[in-house]
Length: 457
Image (cartoon, rainbow, N blue to C red):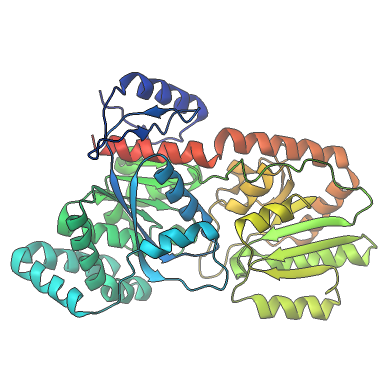
């Protein structure tokens, strides 16, 4: 008996009901190799049986240090028994790479923009499936026309995506999941048109808000659409129509609550007030407002240290701001850090801040995973009242919200939390409970696994 997702958020109550049904329905099957596979709904890790799926993951770049949600989602699906292959549109080369990504990098399908093999694939499609090939190319061009990035970017990757489609078909891929509603979802659309392999995609933040060319066509042809917040779901429905509502399901990103756990002992109250911001150094992340808020607090005589983790195009600008304010010994730029290093820093932190803003280009946060990780560590958070963030950070209950770009509001929130350790502890405990209930990586990866599995029934 198949079950259908209503398109609403996968709540913990609903998950328990689904888990119960799954356990009742599973019975003594093995995969094609004869081995048993872990049941993604099993709380104790016990082995259940179900049919294996071979999933191809498509993303813009891999491995990207800031996109831990993709890396650990893949690893969790593999832990559940799924056969996952990785097809990045581009290879990301960074000085710091999460150790867990190395194995996936070794077997990822990194394709050039052009090669003789890619040329042969185009000729093969033109000979064997000319109508499907030309219609896919025409639909991509028509759907992205008017968007310089999507139009020229889409045409540039079309040959390599067509080649990836052929490789996926040869590998026996049964489903394609794409992270981001931009170029990766367009890749899923092309692959589906050329091979009939069903695809889904996850819409996050700026990918959905900045440019929606072809969003509705991608949504209509997808087997299902995942997004990380109710805010995003309503935006997709508003853009693409009520007819698409039941196709869109909210499945949160998540934190590994085993890795991101509270410290074994409380911090020494004599230590300076410790702040942490974990984010790429870009305008949308709003670090400039946090720096100014800290400058004001330091001017008042507040003893604090603020650590900024991350790198990006705004680094030089932020460094100049810190130097001009003369606060280089109190506001520290730590650069790129691995997941383990971030977890260690969080356990030495009093408050984590995510001062996100809108940009003129339309960039906007989804729900930062860094906030989930901080809350999972039992750290109080201050965040911007923007997009889907209030679904995680409930003002005065699981954290404090301020308006985007409100320096005085950030300073006031930090001042309150420094002065009131009981408030800080209450928000931290409630934040940890919120993450355990709704933003746990394993629970939500299991929900994604079931969602994709139901689409294949």
